[in-house]
Image (cartoon, rainbow, N blue to C red; front, side):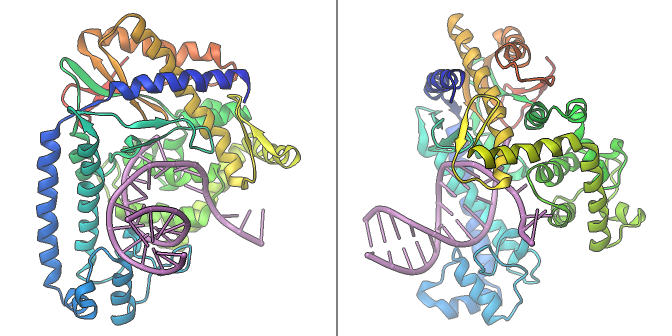
Length: 439
DNA sequence: GGAACTCGCCAC
DNA sequence: AAACGTGGCGAGTTCC
């Protein structure tokens, strides 16, 4: 790493130490109540399952060793005893019983098992971890700068970076556990589309730079043959995570089409006019999976015709690695060693995106300490600075954050050639209730 | 009783 | 020709 990168991690470690010490306030009563609640629901589901003939067979087969948590046993019952054909296989060649594949099986045990898994995850991973890690109602997760290939961060004990948010039921239970300090509000300041922004900085593709704030929405509308005005938040999410990022990091239209298609049913996607997406596609003449795959193939071609400058950059980036044996990020970090093509492409954006946040955290923390503010940085999720902001200080803190995150950073990192935008979401109740605040 | 492994699943 | 990246953690399983 160069001197600037060294300094970033040196100061970053110190800022993270402050952040860890600050901690996040926890509603322990809520956690314990919800854990008990989840455990009751688990018992009910287990009883419901026990009444099915499938589980009776399962018990008969395994006797004392019967275990609802054993996927090996589940596979034996479904695929050997009941002779069901496995819908798909894992990378290692075993039949897959993950949610996506299980749901394709016509059996009364499928839905209760999926629900059971989710409840156990809520109780035994998230709530248990939060309760176990809390000291005097404050949780102090670790944030690491030394564990990740791309020079991003990680978090553990518990991992603060994977608290549920997408699933409405899980998200509510877990995120309500995190509450603000007295007189405070909890939430985050996150960079909008920062990874795509980094892609633009790397390749200098004029169209990526021009479109980076709207690209996910645009591509989502193309994938599902919709007007942009019909794109909901969920549909945009699919455009981003099932089309744009996969395209950028080396996937292609066939698996992408499959993912986009299954998302329609699993996320119950509807247009802004509340029309079912499946029916909309049929009206557009995309009636089956093959039609859809063809359609996505066209979207893919358009995508790379549009962003061809970026494609050229990708090829050059790979060639340079083949020549030198390493890649050097815009932020001054070098990655050595054997890397796949997809890794090379991903690392170039993933690292620098986080480094923007890290630099901002350092500056923000210095400022908060200098003026002895009650507001504190309490966590970090790759592109999201999680804070507990004292309401009397909120105006000043939010303005300062915007100044640092969108303006000052461009003086430090001269390679940032795209505009930077942030979004603030806070609540004085808990981390679930957060709502956007305009700044 | 623990290390190493697979699988499933949560986040960005 | 081949085909999306980075993590942490719980549970089951196998091996020593």
